[in-house]
Length: 542
Image (cartoon, rainbow, N blue to C red; front, side, top):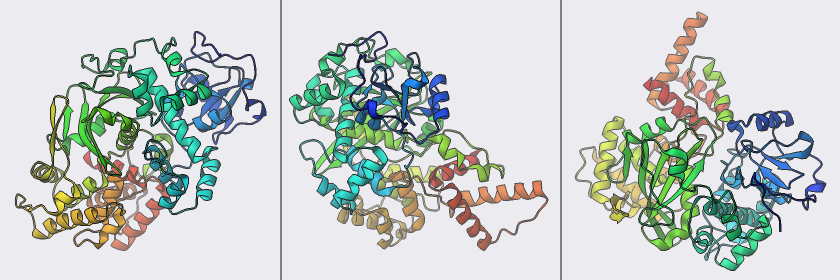
């Protein structure tokens, strides 16, 4: 049995199995960059690479507080799972299982991204787990090709990837909560506690009980009391369904939480969303569908002082739904865009920065709870102000959404597609064509729940802008540049005018010229057009 020393890292007198054959690094970043980042504990590289230590058989994050090993004793990996596949175990001090995700190929490989999204949603785990063949069929590719994609980019198979994610989430729950181990196994997608113990011990050389008894797990595990939420009292919420479950969500800086919070505040639906001005807490209801099961609950997010973390509190309507906790956590990470690599994204803005655009560093994509909700927001927002669109959305939700009491709060849920399809909409003072478009969208989504937003073009009154907006905020598509948006057009026109003054030139801002400009910008910033869209919207406010 391996023991744990003061720094919570695994010790071994022998080279770990598989590591002796690693004579080179497995990372897309240059070695010098990785070395400088790990020695300075640069949080901007957290999750972009991992450090395998040959002498101890562990792997760490770039921010690990332990004394840095000698360069000749390390191997760099661009993903945690590659390090695990090499025979390394995650450090118990910096906890690589909590690192924000980062993939060099993200934004360019649609099939792999869709596969990972489905796996993270639990399609290969739990009681209703699909086979690899079924997953491949949903993606429209062969199981062989899917395996090739995973092996090429992640160095492992789809099933091993799924198992690793389950295991690392269980490890996070053991560290951060006092949930019973049976509940931890269920929340991580294991159907059998025996299977959970076997996999855990094989991968980590410890049982779940031993890990929880380790020095690192015996520290103050209440994230609120330990990390300090702004002006928020400490609550004992671990393993208590009356108060929910707390988890810490790591992100890679920069991250403009205050701007994200303010964006949601202006567009909030009363009862469905709630925000606290003093602590900058944001909460909302959620309803997720898995096969024929609807999982409902609430989540709240608060900023953690002086840490690159947010505190997440999740409450389920039914206690037995804890088995979907992993999916809910991934869902929240997607909504808040916590895994974006802002250094890479913002570097693509250089052509517009040279024209005078100011970048609000750390600005993320503020997603909605569903693509259907994003579509409804887009329809109601046509030709009206943001404030007026928010009022209309409140009317829609209050009159046609469901209500439930979760914890001690009565919450409102966004209307289902079926409810919007049959809604009378007599409460709205807006053109009949827009009402029919809203009904039509609800009917189409109700009849075609798996259809992509591109198929909405069949609905009268739904145009390309609405579809693009829904993809950007509903699907978190990173590459939607809304060049046809009036605000963005005016902002680009101002940048061109500013450049003309500097260069002493005159630009004829014709429709043809503008379209060419939009096409050029879209190509330059791809695949990060959505981030530029929000940057230009933000710039217009300043």
